View 1 (spheres, rainbow, N blue to C red):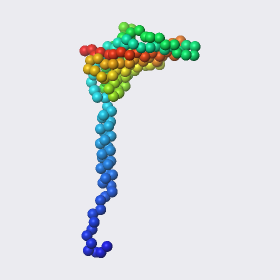
View 2 (cartoon, rainbow, N blue to C red):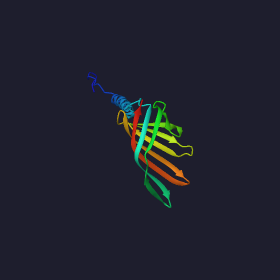
View 3 (cartoon, one colour):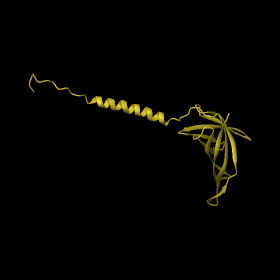
View 4 (cartoon, one colour):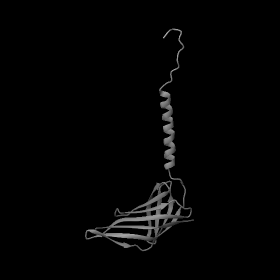
Length: 156
């Protein structure tokens, strides 16, 4: 190259990488926000009624299945921000942990013996919500599982 040649502008290879990094970071922020539960608020009290379901008891090396009877309880003191609630039945109150999901909230009860009851309430309505309730326990050393289908209604 001669001394009087016009210098050619050279693009920095870092600029596209910087822009790509910023775009990727912005995209990640939007993605995480999209995954967050849509509603921070919701009903403080739900009355849940499950009219269909099946219970399975493990006996003699296999599960024996039978239909469930209607099950009703309240989920009260719902605080989605703190992720806590209360199970309210005629027999008393229990503590629930809340796990938030996209368009649903899972209410987990850890029973004294370590067994689990899980109620998932789907955020599909404004006052009536489809719900599934599952029980995972043991009775006299035998595994027992139950799953109920029904709905929860918001109470004021």
